[in-house]
Image (tube, rainbow, N blue to C red; front, side, top):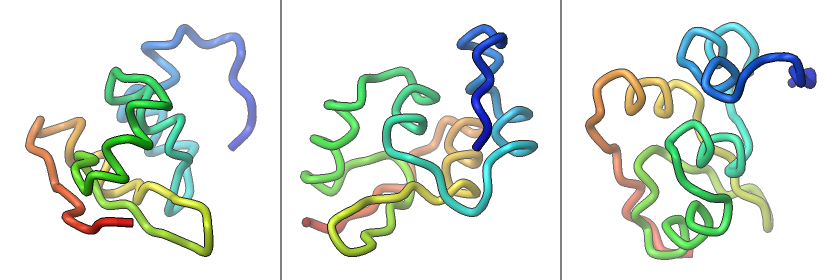
Length: 85
């Protein structure tokens, strides 16, 4: 994802901007910011299996599924991962 330093934070994490600029997955940090909480809280929720959208574990890293994040942002309904790591 290219850096968008000139955009206000709210516009950078809007569903329209995410749809236009993210690929199939995004970072936990960016997804957490889009959802309104910190990176640390995002990783804590992933460990507990309660991150509000689908998370893929790839080796030691975690990636958030963009389509799932967009559904959560647009509907307000969580899609809990329910997997413990």
